[in-house]
Image (cartoon, rainbow, N blue to C red; front, side, top):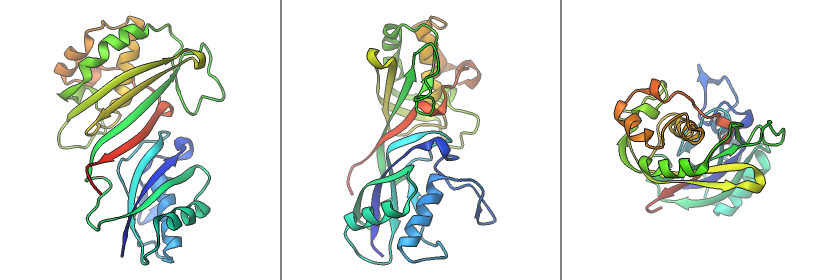
Length: 257
């Protein structure tokens, strides 16, 4: 059975995250993975839904993606473009398959990745824009982006990010490496866009980091607050978690396919 790698975009607003939530083999809530499993098995003519779909990242409820990566095996050998077109005719409109390629049998969407990029959109308008409410986090307090820009380099490098992990984190270690942390000011759109790249991220890590950075931007925390927060390894000290709606999985990178 040939293995396929797909790049997937989705609007996470109406999903209970990416990962299937099931009980006794029955899906309890609508998830991105659940919809992909149904579509892939329909294409593979497998009504028992035995074909698995494995994702690179288990995005949370309300989180979006431009570049989620999944893999699956099909019982026939056809070009990736045919698989892409076929799946897009089956899937609901809030999921889009952007690209499909055949890969080696040992490719694994989750374990083979070496870097992920996320971005987070913050709306800074003084009211909630009805056309942005599902796609940005809203923060109406006055912010100084220069303070945030000064603070962000303190996140770069290998650190124990226990302070920035939500209580549901189940990983063996909270040590992660961040290689990029930047902010872009989009004045015409009344938005701040945070970009983070790293080898992996903890449960809610980016949303908690954004929350701390926004507090730095308001002056509620000093510009040099991050090293002390990292050293504390205490989730209670990070306080604010930015809303899920502003977070996007933008790209998953692999050394080879």
